[in-house]
Image 1 (tube, rainbow, N blue to C red):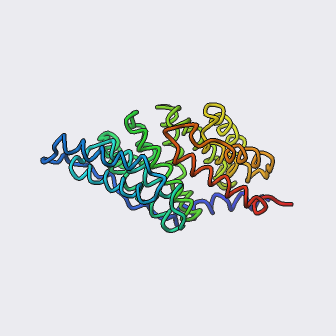
Image 2 (cartoon, rainbow, N blue to C red; image 1 turned 135 degrees about the vertical axis):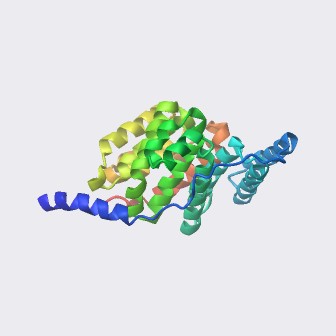
Length: 292
């Protein structure tokens, strides 16, 4: 047992050094001289209309192309950036099924996230000074919250799809950003910080600080605050219940989602439908996750 304690930090260091690097950069956008307010408004309206049908792959992709068109005219349009980061995350998380395509969508989400966060000049200065992306997040303001959250979510999914080494490489940055989110707006997107931290503490390897008690605490807080947000319950089952082999909680939470009404949060119907599909898949495969 003692030898395992000796090996674990060395293993973590080795794995971290071998993780894959996300290639996006914090590229500062320059204002376009030809930007015309009315043209931008029309482009945004067109992309927004398609966004409402984002549960359909074709509509979501057309919407994202529309927001990219907005940025070609108005490179500092925060609404377009927010939708691109969130949209590419959702494309990977709730629409696509091929693992490589999902990973590519999350990677694209992170790349757009970096461009979005570059709108915060204080953050960019800190990163360029070598402060590190995690600590530099102390410069975030409430305006940065949407891009920061969706980028961190996509980064976590992308890292998990890549390797344990990549997870370890980015875990500290993600954890710090969730802390900033909790401070800036702990109610953002249906208690997103609590939901994410619940998954974070369960997903970590045991030698890297996994804490299932903290995980459950965060999940329960998220569900108490937003009981009808299906993602809170699906993650609780998928991360915490699996790790603790709590089949009763797994079944209870996922059954609640499968039997729920996707229209209970009108602005979130595509995401709720995607979570419902995840819940059904997990229930259909329950015997793979729990020992006899």
